[in-house]
Length: 257
Image (cartoon, rainbow, N blue to C red):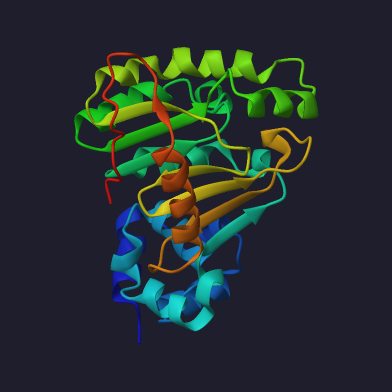
């Protein structure tokens, strides 16, 4: 059955089979099959939906639920990168700007985010004022875990210096009721970056800086997949975190979804 919604989205956005094929890194015959009714793989659905500025569920109704049932947890893996730095900065920017309900950022320093995206905090403030829940957790610079990790990495810019830089960048969020900025004191397991139903996860490696660690791009399809496991990881660390700033409430902001 012809996918009329996809065809109409092509026409409205001014794309051809050839131009979409180039962007999705497939051949035009594959795009023709999509127009004829074949459902693309998750990573291609995401790419095409972003390209056409359309909702994935609108273009392929029920595809995410069917894919989850057929492939299990692996269906939630949109992409995997051997290095965090391999993921294009534009993809990060798209995930940040498209989130409407919840953004969670968990890491030891999060130093690279405001460095890579100079307007990040302004974007987060705007979203916060529109009701989006923002939760940011960085490592306590006085933590023994930070000291040990510094000894492992041997980076010229220490973790403490990077944490202090991030705190200065994220400090304006303290003025927003829907945002919370907290210290966590867990060993370095995974950094988690959640944007509504999309998530980026960095599994950290011994003596390896964050930019050189692997990166997983996940999309939630159901309640029992990889996305939910890493979301629970965030919640457990968040529950043990403490507020930054003496005038902040002791009770942490809860999940928005």
